[in-house]
Length: 204
Image (tube, rainbow, N blue to C red):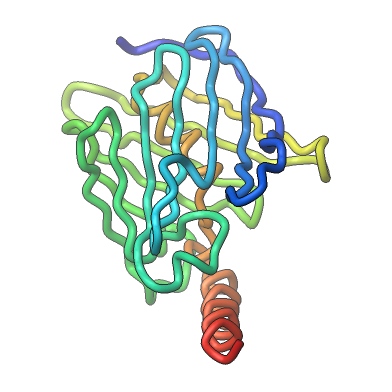
């Protein structure tokens, strides 16, 4: 069901330290229309060579974004490289142009539950998720902006148009994903970081 939503914020969250277990991080908050929203990474169950972010809560379909591969053990959040995404257990098709110059050109394009989406970076701390217009629906735009520092960090979600539950699950999900490659500068930094991390790990 399409619903107009009130802007709401997700607050920074982290789990207590547990010996022998990776510490979890995330965002938590409440949408007046959809109830509790919880974003967690790395989500359980922990697995070798995989890192997962998960969205649960309220009236939203569960969503998971997973990166697998050798370098997944060296990052705290899943990245857009070698990734899979599922919403309500259904696979989301994803593609992007790694060589595009503009933010729009580098956007992540997705197909989820019969709808087409585009995720575009608005900068290091902000992004826009669009469910694209079709013959039956005018679409919607959900923007997310991260503000604050330390324990006072927040992600505020706003929508222009009427959202579906899957729209909000996807929008919240990407607050727990490394989106740096959606900008050209961020892609260069991410590449150097991965190379350095891999070198450090293999020479330790």
